[in-house]
Length: 242
Image (cartoon, rainbow, N blue to C red; front, side, top):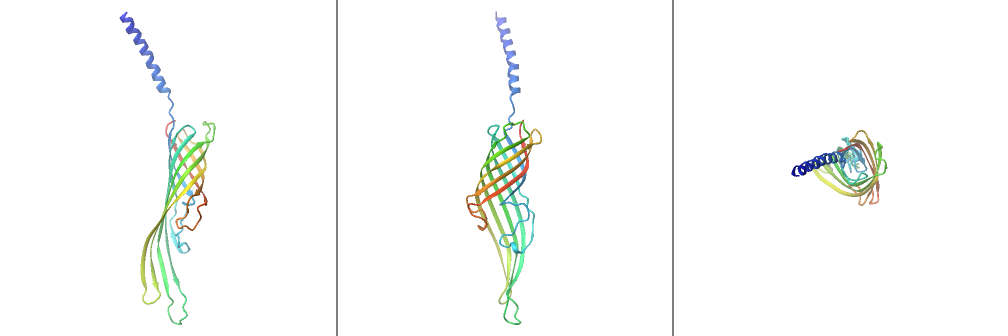
């Protein structure tokens, strides 16, 4: 009897191991995390040569600016995800010009002053968005999503240069170095198109509309708190898992 009990227990234990192994092997891998990288463009971070704010009429040269955005997200469910994005760009402009005043005294040199310097603009965009997949069939290569959330825009402008005056007496030169910074807060909504290139890689395009909750310009001159702006991003996304 003792032998039969041991044999029966061994058979039951041996049958349970394959079942446990099959359950573990059949458990699907959920692609909950993803990261992306791409080119970015917006009202705050345009692609191209930045203007030297305040001295745009006499820019001598400027660097080319190409904003880049990094995104990371997490799937709460197969159709709902939350993601954060970080876009960054910087550009430098050289400016300089001499201004000459008219004089009514014959033979007297005209008074003048010369300004020359460098302006560096840096912009950072941080977004926190929810994403809902509109396409019902997840097997389709082309998918469409709705986006909604908030964006923080942080901009700084560093201005360094000198001013040489020749108004009365010997010429005098003064230097200046100052920084301006501003935060803008936006409501963000839009759509995203995704095309699956492989099991884990997607080509993505985002288009969003943003409403500024405060003045959107670092100098406060280009827009009001009700200004609507747009942003776009084109890049690649890698999804972890199957």
